[in-house]
Image 1 (cartoon, rainbow, N blue to C red):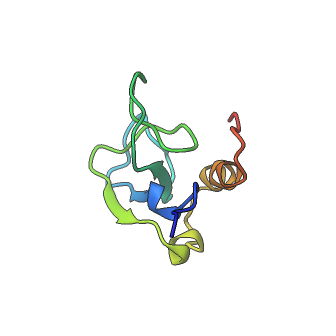
Image 2: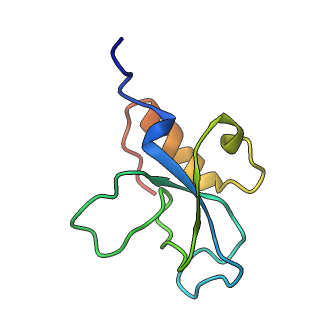
Length: 90
């Protein structure tokens, strides 16, 4: 059976470490990250454009993770757009 073009498997959840980084998200938020990082960028970023924390806790993205109250709303908007095949700009 062919695999669908869009899948939760293509993403991961990251949680920031206890000490929020100077340049990363300033709130304790769970962010989404493409599992396959894109080459050619200056820094690794989340879907919403935030820099990755220094020591993130990586989690597999599942449907329960999408219901997490700490999920970054901007990351969710980008994920939903990508699910529809669009390329949002944030």
